[in-house]
Image 1 (cartoon, helix red, strand yellow):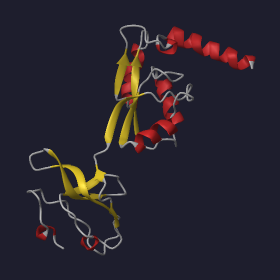
Image 2: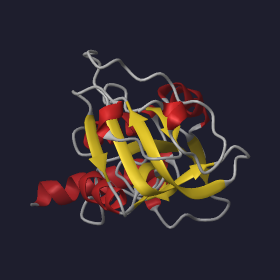
Image 3: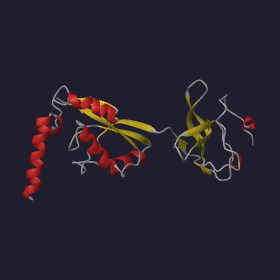
Image 4: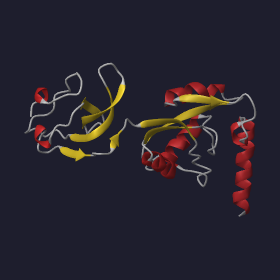
Length: 213
């Protein structure tokens, strides 16, 4: 079935070219009778849709506001019909506390990101204050990334923290990829986030407790 022969509920840009039938390029096709997509006026609407995704890059190749049959695509394409479920754009939660490392019993990367995925959240940005060490230094960020490795079910970004005494760490944190900064104009309630002195005192206390065991 040619794309131009398919009935459309409204005018829509022609989707990107799909691979020919004999192409070895992998392709994932997602369809549903109900998908949240934008119309030609950039208004969000609920419409039948065919969504082409590259499994190599994870990016959307094209979106068509109608349902194309499997015969429209190469035989090696993965074709998944989600009807009558609603397909939604992935949500972004820009304020989460994953607390790992150091306070993983509160929440950690594995449980926190898995819960996010189950609710349709595909990206989370982690706050900098509850982990030990907090994300107020480049070292703290590196410890976060190390703890997250192999545990994340969704995309994860990190905030850096602004505290007294860490001005020299802000540019290195930016260069390392933090997505923003968190700072308080009052006490944060988290000793390790207040200053380098408090962080050092907290680390010494932890070391004494562990040694005492």
